[in-house]
Image (cartoon, rainbow, N blue to C red):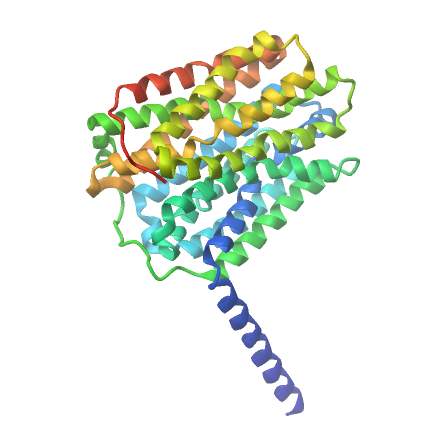
Length: 414
């Protein structure tokens, strides 16, 4: 009797604490989603952050780095297309999909520790990690609209900024655990993803959930490419994506090259890689602010021009001061992703109103598909070309700017 009463009392106390926590989280939905996005996307480049230690211990090469990064990208593309064509996000709550994806992604990332030198299992578990990321990043966008529809445009810049910071986070975690086994930062990323999933599960779905659109016919999304303005914006996004993820993959190699010339050891590579990628988060937020007065296209053009110029100039400046090169890498990191939320805003504003969701799904799928050959080429040729592989990224920004130039300017802003 007494034992049962104590158990009942504990259940009431626990329930009340959970209720209080949920009420608190729902007072600040946007920060909760943004933090959960940061934690969840730390899975994306988790092995890239420990690459130098992983390669030294297991004898892996830059080609292996590209192969495992490609696995995540391929998984993400497969996952986003599956969610789009099946209407999965409309059948189940976005918060539940996010939480489940965070749990499974954390497990897949943790299991990689056991199979890191066992091909093709290493590729398979990175692919599964990418599949799970498809339930984190896009669903985070849907939750923002469900909770803060009036500020969804500005929040998009924050979400892309958190994706960028989440991509950089494994480098920071490795810098903080240098001298410890490389498995620790990977397992740390899994714990962060779990924490993000719990936060979103407790938050739940917002009161302004977008109306269900059901499964997306891909032909409906492809039809948007017949619209000249949308086609021009999509071309700009495709060029941007050719450069973005390949650059992020190369960052520890580029930073390591300059630090080695300065006589510095491996210890600083992770810190500089985090700074170079992470500063892109600030670029997204700054771009979002500038777009309010100057327009999304103005921001996208300038960011793409700066990053494209650095793709072209970097190899020719490679013999000069490594300090100068590190500064250029920081500027490159700031500009390379600042245009991403602006392209999404421009595409949403130019797509047919009845098929905005399907149009963006197709555009994103094609854009991430283009990251595959770019990563494969640059990582595979690094050992032969070194810094000159940056020239392989130049066609992306050039094509993107050419495509944007074909479309009439739009006042769309974030």
